[in-house]
Amino acid sequence: MLSLVVLSAARWLDRHMPQKNFAEIVVRSRREAVIDEAELRRMLDAFDLQGARVCQELVQGGAVFELSGPFSGRGVLRLDELSAALRADPRVLEFAIRPRKD
Image (cartoon, rainbow, N blue to C red; front, side):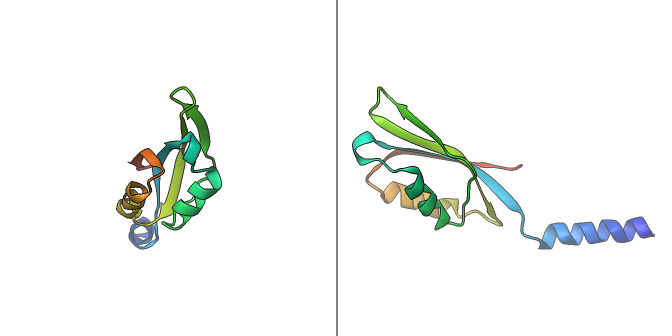
């Protein structure tokens, strides 16, 4: 009987508590019109995404600056809205948003 109560409580918590979801995000911009880490974090924060670390890389012979890393948020991630914002930003050459289920 006790195990049934514990399992029911765990199932209720799983359905009603906001879960943390993750996405790998990569943003590439031109070196002369760079989006830096602070700006990327502000942009992602507007969509309720936070990340502990951001990797920085200069690629394509130094012409392109790339920022990437794992970001997380509670509940349903607003990745479609983020995609629209990145497409609208003329500084963004390329981006990738890869949802994960950890």
